[in-house]
Image 1 (cartoon, rainbow, N blue to C red):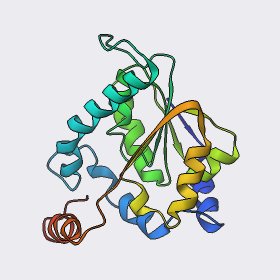
Image 2: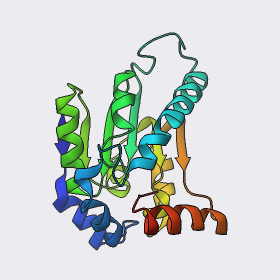
Image 3: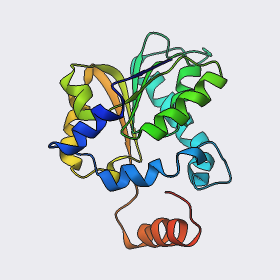
Image 4: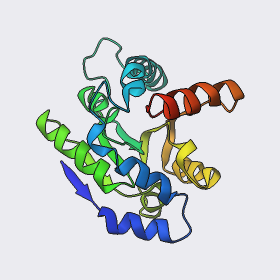
Length: 200
């Protein structure tokens, strides 16, 4: 398991023209130790994870013409989990055979994710870095997981452009975010976050 670039690199990106929102990074850094607590602040992600894992597996297998019966169908594919947090998506993808690069601007998140992956015996390339820095380095991927991240960045259009630019020809990017509706705001922000203390 590797950790590259580090918090200094992520801080440089945040200080320059960047999609990173320092306040959001600080907010999630403060809760880094709770990522793997299924009853903690990230409880909604733990509950939703089986649904999105099934969807990602099915769509990626169909897109690349992979064997749906294989226990490691993603062997040979390079995945990026951008805004990986504690690694809730990265670990299952690694178990399915993906070569994982998992990036987050929070050094605390990366530390939590790295320790947990090591405990599970998983080889995941965790990096404290940003989409901009990965794109500038010329990194490319078969699959990019961009899940519940865009609502936390300062410049969504630049962020998406950098992510899209890292896709290999014929690659696949998954993007998920909260609905931009009053109902979604009431349930996810007011109800879940402010009242229950969960993170959407």
